[in-house]
Image (cartoon, rainbow, N blue to C red; front, side, top):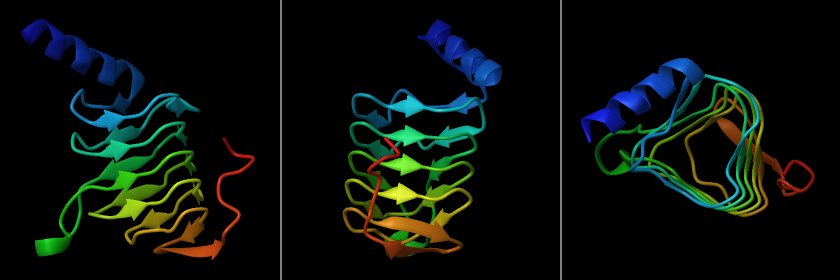
Length: 128
């Protein structure tokens, strides 16, 4: 156990990517670029998700809204995007680079901005 923890920390330092063993990630998870990726230990990420460098998926909020995101299937997350709080990102969504997502999103949403807003429902088709 101790050896595996040391090995995990070594990998985090070398790659700049922190993905705890306790988070739930579906199949075909893809990291497009090196470094700066942080995923909370309680995060849930669906199948066939594609994330870029600098992405943070973490805990945020106060009281009843404190928690971590649940991310659906076929999601594209652009560089340096932050997804935080007890929210649900539906299936087939695209999140633009440098966006801050703090509210839940319906299926097929394209989100952009700080805080992120839905601009259309074209979703992640073509990004995954």
